[in-house]
Image (cartoon, rainbow, N blue to C red; front, side, top):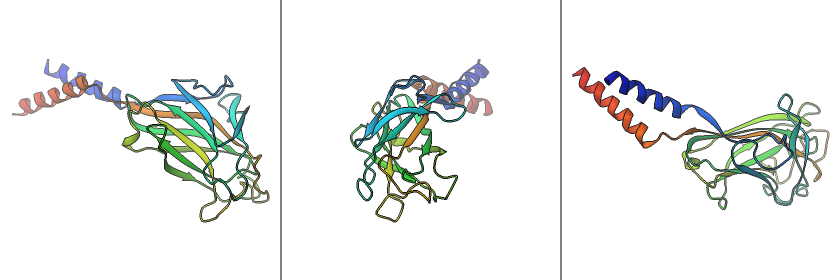
Length: 218
């Protein structure tokens, strides 16, 4: 009986510790609704969208976002937003594939929220533009978020075009190109991941197993 309690407790905690896809957008249905879980993608700051060729190996379509701010204006104001509840989950991470067109901003800032109103900058991604290999290129992005974003019914994050670090303007993703408002950022396989929060009963079971083990050692 004691061994059974210990095994059950271990299985309960191990199951909760496995990361799971909470919400995902693969855009294969050419819609802003999530393809896995419940969530919605939307546009920020006046951007527009179409559905274009997706990330290699992961399907046909991706979310193509355009109509960005003019050079030297609107830093961190335009891009895409992805909203989906993390209720019942902790250890939240967000992952996506992002394609920068040649004339798009080489830098994006990532913001996250727990209430859909207040947004905190959690990460900046940038790279040094080159004559080839940096524009019209896909980048794998991943952000590990703090505990404050766990178990949040109104969780969301934004990816916004940003000025190049230390400057007052946008820098094109290809060194031989000029930044343009009709540039595009393309998103695919946008995913919110988390681990299920153990139920109170599982935690109590683990405590009971620990108590049994202590008594046996005595």
